[in-house]
Length: 271
Image (cartoon, rainbow, N blue to C red; front, top):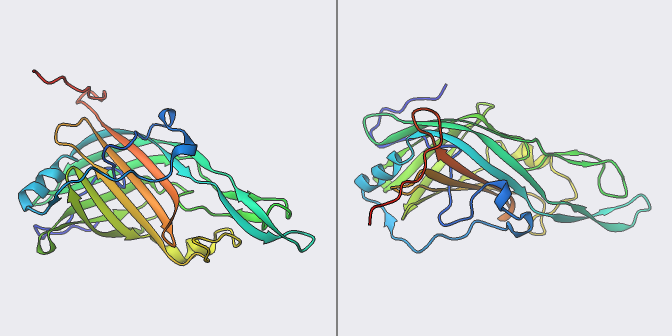
């Protein structure tokens, strides 16, 4: 169960582990070339949003039911290891690009602006499997974001008025909580947190892999959520960094559903 906060200035749930990107390419697999996916483009210059009314208005943009489509991308990586003849050689982890699909349902909660979301988003489980000792350390190695964690997941998000920022808490499918603080600039909210249960995850990675030329020491998750005031969709991106180096990027498009369950269409503005 997700704890309840009675303070007016705390958490609101946002769709889908929820993060989006402003002016970024959509997450649909059909429209992305995996070789071109490198990082989340920076948003246009925008002033920070710290006024409580404006922050609350942004949070309420997330309320709704969604159909979710997107992708998980892991870039190509190389590593050094010793082969069966004891020679140091180079191995390679080939890039992965998997579709992600699911649903989301976000509702306002609490006396103040707050959102609570339930997500059910999944993708094909990914592992690094090495069977040939001349290709790398033999084993089945875990990958950051390789195992879906949003099927289901619950997200709470709201305002931390004392510090003029947002606060969020995501509880994944294993019941593990991950949360932190975030800020809004323009239509985009940005959150940064430590990866939940990071030490066991890092210990199960390919032991020959180095990140920023070092063994894995730190793991961070950066989430961007782009929600426009008149939009029919919310764009979310989740970047995982190990030693400040990007190792996985999830991009999701949350398409708002009408009362009959169909995707809402964009309406043309009158001139």
